[in-house]
Amino acid sequence: IVLGREQPNQALPPLVKARERLQNDPSVDEKTWGLVNFYLGIAYQHSDPPDLDGAIAAYGEAIRVWPTMVSSRLNRVAAYEDRKRAGDLELALADASALIEIAPDWAPAYNNRASILINIGGAENLEQALADLERALALKPDFPEAYLNQAFIQIRQGQSMATAAPLFEEALALRPGYGTALNALCWGYGLARQPEVALPYCQQASEAEPEPLHYDSRGLAQALLGNYPAAIADFERYIAWLEAQPGDTWQIELARRREWVAAVLVGKDP
Image (cartoon, rainbow, N blue to C red; front, top):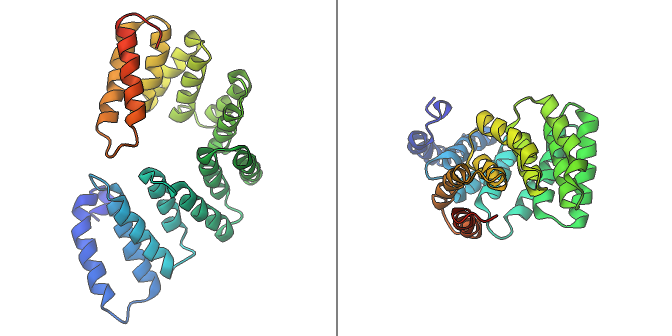
């Protein structure tokens, strides 16, 4: 009940105790043991601060006894992606491939693997991602995430924003107010130096989903339009979020945004 009310920190102690009791009970069946580890993984993953090592270990135990449990693999993929250690994307990829083996007719499994391949990068991985997305759309033609990923691949392959934009727009048509698609159009048109086209998408993204990354994208458009106070305000919101992130994963991004603010303060193009 506590976990269902989105109180993972409060859910952790009773879940840990439940697992300790079940661990010493020879009558416990594998699915019950898998479920308690699955729920413990959720609590670790969403606690404040997240314990991604604990989550990955708990999901791993759930998968060990219940290999075909889709939810444990999906959540472990997300935990690997959030942890961002060397080799974690490859571990996430292995889980994503296992999901396709478990559920070969489930479109999200192919989109999930495509997303990881895009993040790993490289020509061969992008080609495999495209094949996965074609399979996903064959199974589920009204799949906005798949169109979004197709557009991201086109950008990664060096194609123009004009080429990728219809795919972003298709994702939006299928899911109006889709913040990730709106932000991609904002950022993409900003980088293409069309800030007047970008800004309406930026505003819609920030209104739909007030995420730090969306303010960063809007800051770029505002800076390119010469709206420097607004650009600085947006960049500083993103910087504050970056500063609060654990570890050093975001340090390069943080340094770059501080440079952008310094440039905008003296009226320069960041």
